[in-house]
Structure formats: structure tokens, C-alpha cells
Image (cartoon, rainbow, N blue to C red; front, side, top):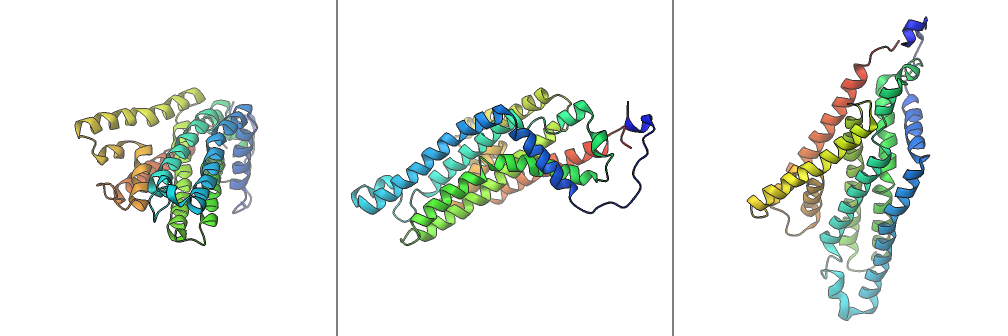
Length: 288
């Protein structure tokens, strides 16, 4: 039974301009963090991060102490170069995707299923605060496998090579890596929340997220074979667009695709997902 059908009298006083969104963000993050599967998956996903941190020590040792093996560490003026940064970013993307499958797809679906919106909006909060809070909560969760590793890995590399001739390229790679890691968290969070807002069943949201990830990748493989490996095939899926962005920003020989193309696609996908969330929340029924 809806709240307004139980003689509930809605609040009609002044509304606080802020604060509700942060409560939603903390609650969303805290609920996901409380799940055992979240902690277990984070432990597993951080193993490659720790290995990568160890490789930074190896890279520095090779360049400083074994000049004859410098070729193994990458191009002379770029360190490991765009290839290594792109690989780490792809690893972060799929880590965020797995984490969302385990702990993020029910962020809005469970509210729809258990009708907790009536409790939320019986308080003096705005609907945009709910949307912003959910987005920030899921983004913070994604950041644990994207932004935080990027800061650690990139910061360590930049600190090690700060006084060498590689300082400029390393700092550039670090900044690009951190920015793209934040973009990965934002895009993944928005798409997952958009899917979660479409159903009351978390399982359906998970299946939808798997479809969003892998169906376009199959299409990309088909297009790639048909076009003899053209870079445009990567425009059909999220991971490919991030690959094009990282290569375009870091590689001296960027892909044939203009860098603005993957940018526009990612912005459009995120915007469409956020619009879907807004539409769903503003169409809720049974709220006082």
C-alpha cells in the first residue's frame, strides 16, 4: 500500500538545499561494501594491481642499473609508453565491470522491488539528490578499482622518474591515466544505474550489463574481420572506445579514428543512461 493511502501527511515546509545526496551516496557505498562478495572480489581484483606496482620497481631498476636491458622497458623516450598504460586502463575497465556485476546492478532495482522510494521521499529530499547520491555511491565503488590504482601506479612511476629525462612523458601518462580512470568509473556507473532503473530484478540488470559489454564486442569482432582490422570497429563497444582514447592521447602513432569520435560516443552513452534514470525516478507512482 502506498504511503499516501495510509493517511500519510506529506511534508510541506522548507527544503534543505543540500545534504541528502551525500546520505544516499554513503548508504549506497556502505551497502555494497557490506557484502562479502564485494570484499572478496576487490581482493582478487587488486592482485593484478599489486603485480603492476611490482613491475614499476622492475622498470625503474632496469633503467637505472641495467642500461643494456633498457629496450625491454619500452621506447627510450617514453618508458613503457602508451601500450602499458592502455593495458592497465583496459584492466581497470573490466575490473569495474566485474565489480558492478557483483555489487552495483541492484542499486536502484532493489529500491524498485522493495518500494523503498516511499520511505526516501517521505523526507524533505529532492529526487535529484537521490539520483546524484546513487551515482556518487556507485562511482566511489568503481573508483576502488580504477582511480585509486591509477593514482598509486601513476604516482609511483612519476615519482621514480621525476629527476630523469623521462619525467615529462611519465607525468603525462600519469595524468592521462588518472583522468581516463575517472571517466571509466563515471561511464560504467551511469550505464549500470541506467540498467538498474529499468527493472525490479537485480538479475535482469546483471544480464543487461553483460549484454551491453559483450554483444557489442562480438559485433566489433565481426566488423574488424570484415574491415581487415580497421580501428573503427572499436567504436562499437565501451572498452574499445576507451582504448581509442588512450591510444589517441598517448601513442605517437594514434589510431585512424579521430579522437573526438570515442569521446562523443562515451558522453552520449552516459547521457542517455542518466536521462533514463531521471525519467524513471520522476515517473515513480505511489509517492507522497
